[in-house]
Amino acid sequence: MWRDQLLEFSKDYLVVAPDMRGYNLSSKPEEIEQYRQHHIVEDIRALVEEHFERKEFILIGHDWGGVIAYPFANLHPNIVEKLIIINAPHPNIFEYLLAKNKDQQSSSQYVLFFRSKNAEGFLSASNYKNILDIVVTPEMKFTEDDKQMYIEAWSQPRALTGGLNYYRAGSLKPPSSGEKIDQLTNKIKPVMIKVPTLVIWGEKDTALTTHNLDGLDEFIPDLQIKRIPEGSHWIINEQPDKVNKLIREFL
Image 1 (cartoon, rainbow, N blue to C red):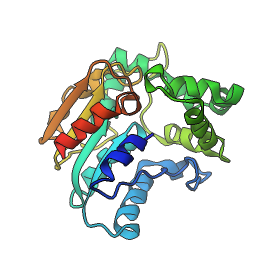
Image 2 (tube, helix red, strand yellow):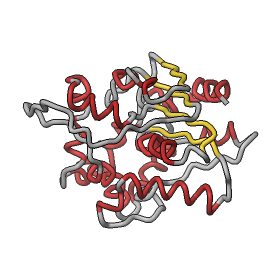
Image 3 (tube, rainbow, N blue to C red):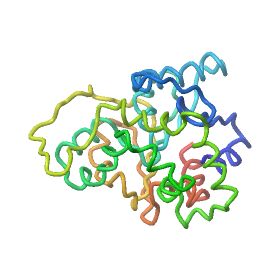
Image 4 (tube, helix red, strand yellow):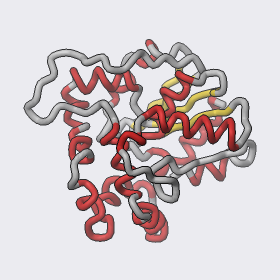
């Protein structure tokens, strides 16, 4: 997924794109509790401080990577030089939207299915056709070899379950169709970000609405938002040169 960024930024930096736990070749704990946020945050801290022995680094996160990057920067601002988020929700804003915003509630209905026991069978059917249809768009210009790399990663033992366990372990989920939420649960403490932050957002994201950008500056004082109107959730792969340019300008 990050290949274009790895190629571009390795000219000037040590660039690392790890498989988070549960994915591809990383370890895959069976207990759903092991996929809760604080464990993944600790994985990244250990990777940076203990494995690479870095005192400071630039953190970039997309989708679940971004969901983890926000609390990481909140908990460890001393080692995050800058934060870059690409189409990933801030936890406090997302909590509000799931409670109050019908657009986001509708766009998040898939989460309920991903939490169900039927998700693995559906996504792996017909040689993973259904999940390929979700994560590969025509704008990516992926070859059959590119798609096969994704299939090989999903085919690793327990890898599909590992990825789905992020949804199952998460505390945030939309109300089911017809269900009403009258008030915020306020389960999440304010996640304040004190480091310079760039948010890149493909506005044609069908899972995360642009409402996720509203009020971000309340949690991130040093914030830049760059919208890409024609980009989807997978903007990294659809328009890598534009994404790379925005990252370069920010760095």
